[in-house]
Image 1 (cartoon, rainbow, N blue to C red):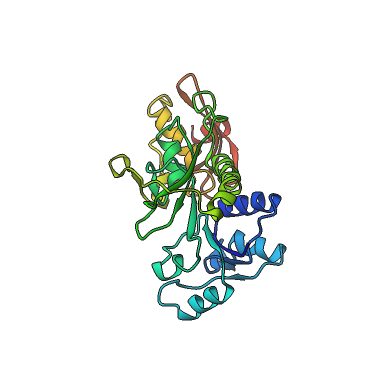
Image 2: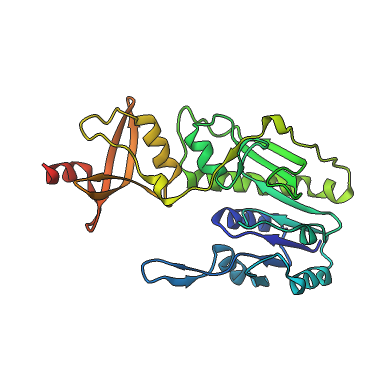
Length: 287
């Protein structure tokens, strides 16, 4: 089966690795353009582009999918059966998602119609969501609103016992989504699955995460204050944008923390312009 994969993030790479273990390998990968990263703003490819190179798969990273006749011609010439999208990051126009005979499917890391939008992983953690899972939908022109092809709720996560960080949840849901895709693929190709429209009344939306969202309101004299909310932000925003608070007009980045007896227990921090240190050493320093 010829198919094209659209993806850009680590979530996409987890999906690709799991599909590869099922011998489902794309003929072409489309990802977003290289972006400047780090203090030196070095132009860096997406993790998907790196994966494609390691696996000798053709990869292209167009600046835009809209009004791109050369890309449309290339995709049509490939005669793919299917497109698969997993955390691509850009809107795919109708002239592209309607090219394959078996349409375009999307692996979304939430139980749709809940948590449509740009930050389903972070939003589920922030809301301390107890029911998490993945949904495969057929893409249409509305964001994450296409008919549902398959859905799977995770039974292995117990948020009440252990709240996963974003990276842990991302990997788990990506692997589950890829396994679900591999499971339903034969029936989808046969045409025996009838997608079910989402119930718009149950739809919820999540916003794009901004860097400023990582600021926490920390009371160093009372770490029980806003403890649950702050801890959920630490778990949701790990890696990016990270979480921090201000002390004496200096930004203090939290690098490790736990929730213990309804109190936020900060273990390690990285004060602005300094190396990582234990929270106890930080408190001694400001006293």
